[in-house]
Length: 117
Image (cartoon, rainbow, N blue to C red; front, side, top):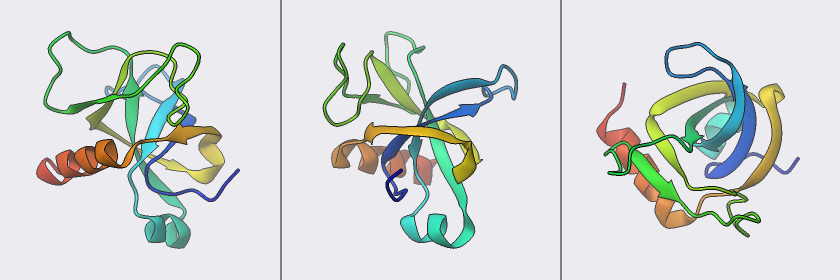
């Protein structure tokens, strides 16, 4: 697996926001590269295909294509849900599938900074 870095889209098993129903799902790494290297702890926001038609303020629509987007690797309409922050270890990662475009990553990070929980 390539060196982990902020903005990578990976797949790992995480629970839903109510801390139930573990499922392997795509995640966007939001930890800074130095934090990943020094602590081994990786913070991510979950990617979900379940969201209302009117996009909530905590969601960022990500590029996709049915046969897999060339940059993100995503195959269906989905969002990075910035209020769904998860903590994982490198050993939890199943595989890397792509990378979030820079403008989308900036929006995700801005939303996280505006609403730290």
